[in-house]
Length: 193
Image 1 (tube, rainbow, N blue to C red):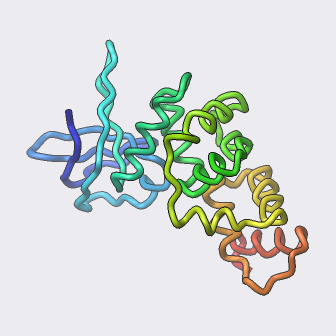
Image 2 (image 1 turned 30 degrees about the vertical axis):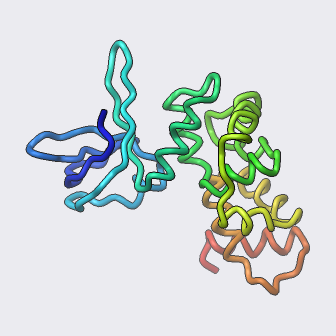
């Protein structure tokens, strides 16, 4: 089908972008972090996956082949359709998904809006033998129990897993292991103080 799409962004919508190629605008649904980086008029190359249903052909786009492959793997999970797979990729980075899978921590995915506890457990179980660990996983796996608690607190406050992970990574290495202090330092990333 359609493996890649190269063109120029002509419109950014709530959950998709319109990419013009050869005078035709194609709607491409993207994970939220990718969509946030897009600008009208910018040239793009997406690795795509076309989902054909009886009532619609829907194109999903990703900035890397690895992200597209992860999306396709998520679709293989029982009960996970394209919208849920896109929600997982919008709310959790590839590193968080890997940590959830290899650390047997489905609650990390359960914090993503639109993904319930049972769905998160199914994803972790399904991906365990299919997903290959990457070097980035080692950094995420090194997350301490205190940082896991900070991640839980930040997501409870309404921050996405991706935002929370970025804030935790910005905490100085010499910061104390106290959960309250680490949470205060992580919150400073959002307030700029």
